Image (tube, rainbow, N blue to C red; front, side, top):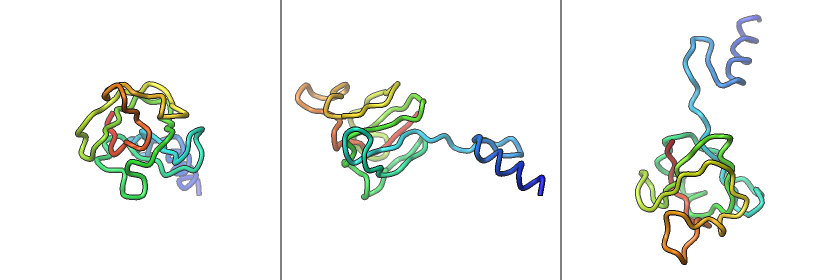
Length: 111
């Protein structure tokens, strides 16, 4: 019983009892601005967010981490390094042509 409680506690805090780190969550993508309608949460090193979230995010929570976003799968294409959440990706233009925004553009992540 004590071992089970220890394991649950370790998993909840992001580490395993054996000292191995659980992959950190890089970001949560949301279908709408203002962090509405979560599409899912992905770890650092995600090479493709999947068809259900690809090029659909309008806001992002980076879960208190620094995260690089990529416009294309496999960490390719235009990218931007985020240090904080964005509640409306229409306002994020860094790393793109002046008329483009990151709204409905994210395909992969790295640390």
